[in-house]
Image 1 (cartoon, rainbow, N blue to C red):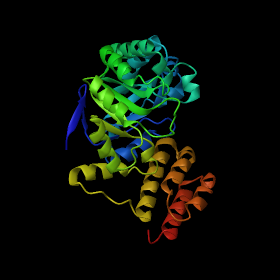
Image 2: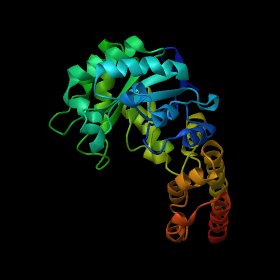
Image 3: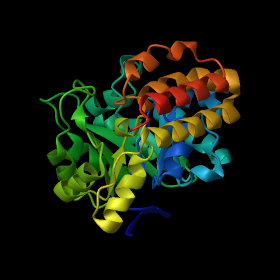
Length: 326
């Protein structure tokens, strides 16, 4: 298997888990890691929340040994706070600090953070420089192709970020105004790769091992990130790795196996967050795990009735019984 290095961090050149707010928590990341994700990125961490001592923000920074290599992702619009937050992250020993310059969600953008920085390259570069100066590890940045179709500036911004000292650039090949609609423009990733000498990570529309290989081939990127394609499918990383090793595409797991994996995920959430909170947060994951199965709509319609791990076991049994030939 081939590897790339980001700073001093060695990463298998298969597929990484993209950062996803309210999705990619520790349990989700560990599930993806167990199924072969080469590299993980945390949920967004507010630089101001960290600096001001918010307890919920601090909890997002904790990394378990099983997750490594893993990045902690910071967001913010002020270089000073981003630099101070980067320094504070040293106690959590991240392998990498990633800067969020791509989130299109209105409450993030309205504060000048996330993809709003695509409209202010000078500020984006200043933030990158502040984080690099204060970080205890390599720094990366995740950007979009641009703000809208009339302001595609990912290659130019990538050059500025490289000059500011970042060790790699991740590119979600959509504009901010696209949000998650339409199709990712792989040519933008190719252009960024040609513009910089540091590693480039491609992201957008990868749901299968074949699509992962196509992104590598069409863009020349150094690593591929999978985000929404991993919803209820942590095994996609195992499929990617297997395809790269053997050239053969693996089938989707049976309904029995999916039920088993879902229970493993739920057990992890309960262990890390307690049964009540863990099962509550597991509800959205259940909807993803049953997608495509027979009678999945019936199961999804009852996810709000999940309160205990025993309830989750009952759902797993329904998955097996309703899809016993699947």
